[in-house]
Length: 230
Image 1: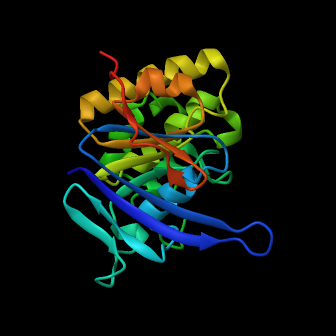
Image 2: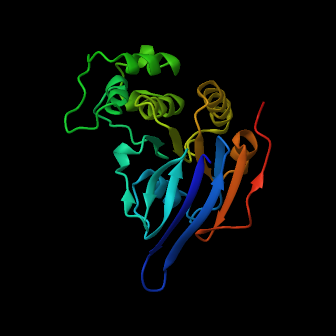
Image 3: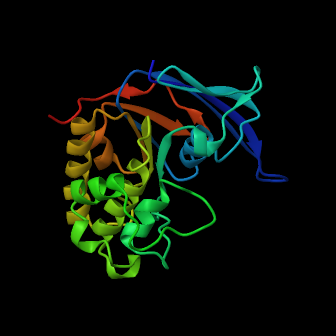
């Protein structure tokens, strides 16, 4: 089973409490968590990544237990080998494209050197067509280039899977369509499992192999399978 997830946590106080209680299991390599804003999609993704600690449940990815509240297992986020791409990409504005990507190899306190030699960085800059942009800073990039830089940073450490938080939300419609296709081609080439969250039905139709619908912090129904793109 590629994904075996149950995460539960109560949040909020007073008049606006929120209970996250999401359970799903899937062997699909293109899994989409779909639902409106406030459904619990980002919280679920952060719990899978180790950025939010559930009160109950478990997270098992490709047979590896990353979190199990009952057994006292809680693998640190940096050791889970899950590449995470934030909605706004979270690139460091004071670092070049090359340095941002290199940061994925060593998340220490020191910034990577501008000229540091790293074959893995070179590989992903070339793969994602960023080699000529390695010296630029994030504010000198287009939306698509920033997205590819964030993807390269997530991929450079050889993750077991990718977690993508609304990766197309900040893009215009034409670029969104093109980058959906690029991400689909990349996933097929790498055979890398991906969980993508979105509130856009067009993302589901273009990318999903299986969709899990969330609403109010829970899975609504049993999800629905759709055909992945050829």
